Image 1 (cartoon, rainbow, N blue to C red):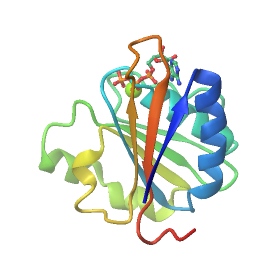
Image 2: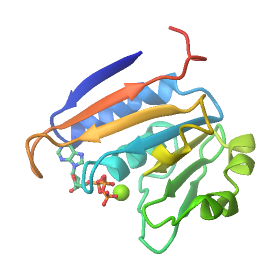
Image 3: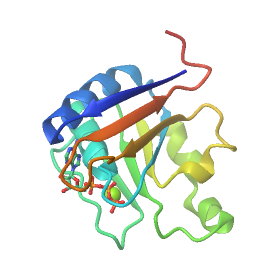
Length: 146
Ligand SMILES: Nc1ncnc2c1ncn2[C@@H]1O[C@H](COP(=O)(O)OP(=O)(O)OP(=O)(O)O)[C@@H](O)[C@H]1O
Ligand SMILES: [Mg+2]
């Protein structure tokens, strides 16, 4: 099952994140993909806020993992852009985060899909260029009914 939403501006991304926050179960893994500047970090920051975390989810390029406390557990934000290979993924220790986090959101996370069939997948696109609307396509895992 996949559904595409048009996000006309950052405010629309934030509203969409509010909806997503209600759908993603505790311990969910969200894999975000889409080209540079597609709006992945913006969406994760909005998710953190929607889940009651701090209102800034920056991603300094030199840090792979950021953790944000929320009332229901941490949101773990991974930016895997510079993650080299399978060994680097192993080193990250994703499973330990998944065991205790409210949500683990991974930018450039497509490589994890095979190993994590229960992951939610969100692909962002910017068909109208840098300043235009983003298109968000969500694929829920088979385990998510309704
Ligand atoms: N729905 C939207 N409509 C218009 N602009 C947006 C939207 N979402 C994000 N942007 C803008 O796009 C730019 C890039 O956003 P962001 O950093 O979230 O992208 P990214 O996919 O994380 O990029 P990277 O691949 O470098 O990590 C920002 O200036 C942001 O404000
Ligand atoms: Mg980013």
